[in-house]
Each structure stands twice: as C-alpha cells, then as structure tokens.
Image (cartoon, rainbow, N blue to C red):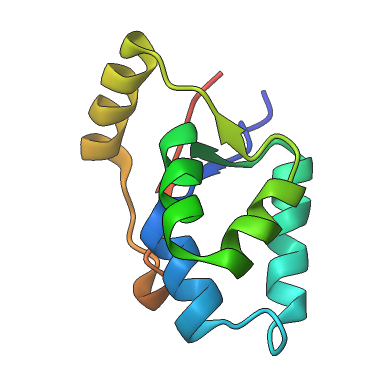
Length: 106
C-alpha cells in the first residue's frame, strides 16, 4: 500500500515571517514557486483565519496567498478539534520558517 502524501498546514506567522523577513519573494522565487506547487497539488493548506490575519498585516503575503487557489480552507468545529488533536500528536517544527507539518492519514 502506498504511503499517504504529507499535507502541510501553514500558519500566519510562517507566511508573514517568511515573506517579510527570512525568505523575501524577490530573493527566493524558487521557494515561493515550490510552495505554490504544493498548494496546487493540495498538499499545502491554511485555515481561513490565516487569510483574515494576513489581510490586516501584509500586502505582499496576502497578495501571493490569494493567488494560490485552494490554499485557504474553512475550519468547522469538528475539523478544528481534529486538527488540535493531530497538532499535539504530529507537529514537527521546521526551524526559522516556523511551519508545522501535519499528517492526515487517508
């Protein structure tokens, strides 16, 4: 049986710090292209709340994020409690970028 592909859930601070501080788009085009490819493949998501927070804080990051169709996903009460449980069991820090890897088995 093939191993399920990892789905990454990115938070607001990862996008903000990545875009504005550590990995500016104009210097790290490949990184942002790869993140976009992950979104397109359905492997990088962010809760709708991230969009709302980005709209208040970063013109560049929100412009990029809104171009990524499928990045933002609604979180209902059931999904939120499931995500919290997975977060506590499966979260892996990726260093300065601050992203979290969450694995959703099929």
